[in-house]
Image 1: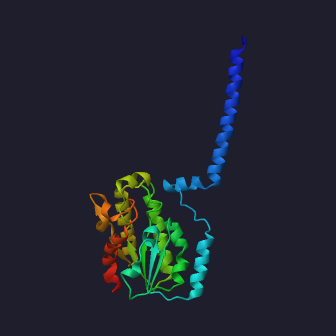
Image 2 (image 1 turned 45 degrees about the vertical axis):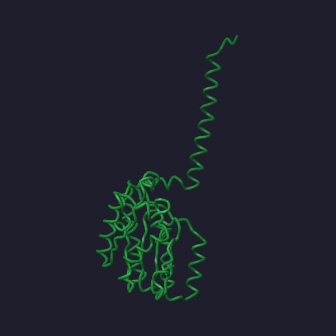
Image 3 (image 1 turned 90 degrees about the horizontal axis):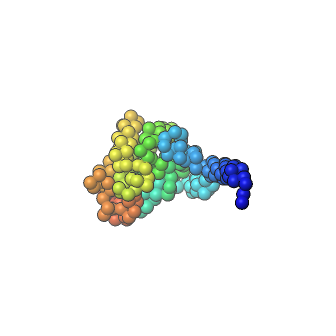
Length: 242
């Protein structure tokens, strides 16, 4: 029979505490090393997300500059922009689609040199759904303002069209931490930014909204559009292209 059970319990407790602290510090180190801490803080509006150097983008940037292509129109944005073959709707103009899957407002800003490389007369910009949450609207508005100002500095003679962020499904509102009411609020803010800079704002949100969320007939996953759904988008911007 153990005559000192209390002593053994204390030893076990100390050992378990040490193991727990080691695991905790290891988790914190890995969490920070992977950059997840800044991503979480950015998601809740406490800081701006840093854009890691993407050598693939740098390579495409260099390639575009060396091509010397003179575009009429650039579509700039994330995967929602990337998903459309705009040439299908506007076959008489030279189009470059610079949609990049997963891109954020900071990332799009970092790619402005890709836009200037093809010297477009018009830029149609959509961005914000990647990173926008209920908690960081003001921070995202600041990022958007920076993006517009850098576009203006880089291409003062280019027409810029600010496209609203599209609604999402009720399920995606939960997973993205971003309700459609927040997207609407963000859209109102970027509309103000566009007007202040004499840019044209185009409301696509209302075209895709049904009962407070994205029309399920127009989306394949609650965020991205079905291929046929881009016709609404094309019709909305057609007057600015023709």
